[in-house]
Image (cartoon, rainbow, N blue to C red; front, top):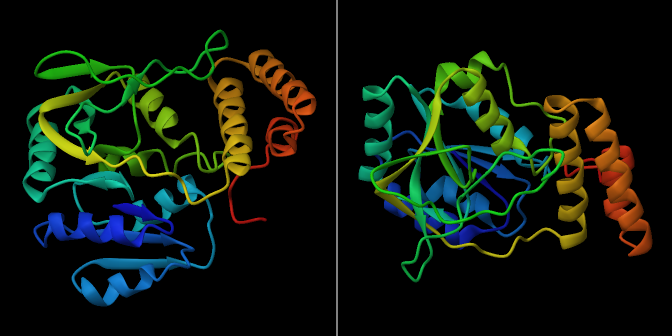
Length: 262
């Protein structure tokens, strides 16, 4: 399942690699770059057109409800993965019940490991940096990038939906902590790879910064307690005030996020 926003060429490359072996659900999150032509170019794909950019989290929830498979691979629109590698991810979940989520090793277009794994946010480290996955074989991690992650469909549906207080940022950390709470592992497989092109977002940096602050605040308030969430909001609001980043202030104090409301 791919959520797309104004990255027509990148999504086309992925669809060409994926072929027709797997069901593909493409959620077009309000693109205005002609992404809709892909519905005709790839007629076996299920295409869902949203009237505007509702943020990644809501778009994922819509796509999950439309998907029919036993396993659902969540992909960002700048990731390219081959059909055979999608099958290998599904095979791993089929054979390893202790695994709750599995991801391919993300590579840069130059063939180097891409930043992909990190710790879950905490009050002392609310936004840990991504690092390339280190290790051999099956690499167990705390948190993996949402650029490419496969989960069982019944697990996603048991959540009812990913918490939509998250906008563009937050779905991946929420999924990873829910996998941990279910006493399952999140793993990266070195034997399976995907190319993460790491394209610059079509959305404004200021909007993304405010959305990220809002998402982290939601996560901390939900999983670390009210006080850490409030303190993080106040800290970010003050930082935004001194640097005149008003989207950050709105994200911190009002929970303003990318959700189609503006």
